Every structure is written in C-alpha cells, then in structure tokens.
Image: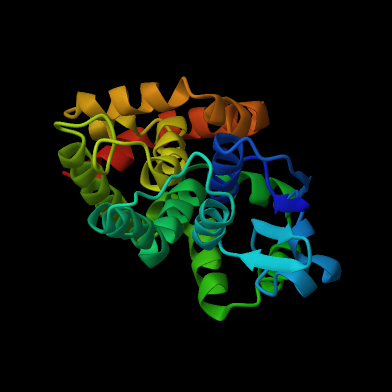
Length: 264
C-alpha cells in the first residue's frame, strides 16, 4: 500500500501529519509545495484539493483531505503505536482537542502568523497592487480570501489579531490545566491531541510569543518531552526551513510588545 503526501515544509497541518507518519514508522513519498509561490493553485493540484489546501494524503486510490481526518485515518488503518485510546472517554477527550483546531484555532494561527511575519514575504513577492490582487484572486473561498486580504494589508493593525490572540490565550490556559498533573494532555498517555497541538505551540514560540505561557512551566516541559521524540525529529525538525524560522524570529521580536499588549 502506497502513501503519498502533498505537504509543505512549514505548514503546521502538514507537520501534524508527518509527525503521525513518523510515530507509526510508516514509509511515504510526497511533494513539498511552495505555498508562497502559489503552487497549491496549480490546476493539477486543485483537481485533488479543490480548496488548494495542504496536506492531502493519497493512499493507493483513495484521496484523504483535511489534516485531522488524515491523522485519524492513519491511526485506524495502521493500528500499531496507537494514538487514540481504547477508552471511550479518553478518545472523546482527544477528539475534543482536535475539534478545537478545526473550529477556529487553525485559522486564528494563520491570522497571527501572517499579521506578524508571513505578510512581509508576500508583500516582497507581490510589489504591485495588481500582482497582490492576482494572488488573492486565486483563493476560491470568499471568506478565506477576505481574511487573507485583511491580514496581509493591515498586519498588526488587523482587528482579527486580538481575537486570535484571545483564542490562543484560552487554549494555553486549558492546556496548562490539563498538564498540571500529567505529562500528556489526555489520560496520562501520548495521543493525537499532543502530536496535533505541538506544531501550533511551536509556531507561537517561533514567533517569539512564548511569553504568553511564561506562568505555565508545565507547557515548556511538555514541549521538551515531545521534542526528544523521533517522530518530532523526522516530522518537524528535518523539514525546518531556516529562512522562515529567521523571518518569524525577527518579525516576532519586533511585534512582541504589540502582541503582549493585546492581552492586557
């Protein structure tokens, strides 16, 4: 059975899937799409992923979209090293963390990432209004297009940024509560909840926003445990893009006073 993944080196959703593939020691092949260059809008890829989103998993003749669906599919089809508990309550709790990502946290991380850092890349690539509007026009979903236009144009002044910051303040508080007496988020065992949330928390750290969880040392301890795992090394670190990380570090340092003030 062949596994083929369309992904991107620094996409948190793609990182999530690669971590699970590595955790389960699954062999796979793939294409690393350059999202800033718009490769996700190519006609060939849009036939597979109509919204132009990564990751996409091809398993033999089956196409699996959406990262949370992909990781749960992998856990069901490849049951070795399970990441969903046999206990019904623990499974429900794990899925509850995943649902929070789908219910808005993923989009809110995009708001933070673009307002703080990635907008600078796009504005350097698209130096005229016509070029920038052409890029926006490739986004088929009107709501996604409107969000992208706002956060790229307005950056730290986007009204969406404070709402996103508040959402992550709540997430960090809830994670800290779950980790207060446990090494892992659910039932004392590593699960899809831990592996799925890791890329999101690491992204905030790369954006120099770790001050948000300074009151919660257990969150840094959780991060340290996950970063020693082979799955992290293969799924995230080996795909790290130094130029992106430098951009996030530098832009985040400049933006941190503004970001801190949003939660005061």
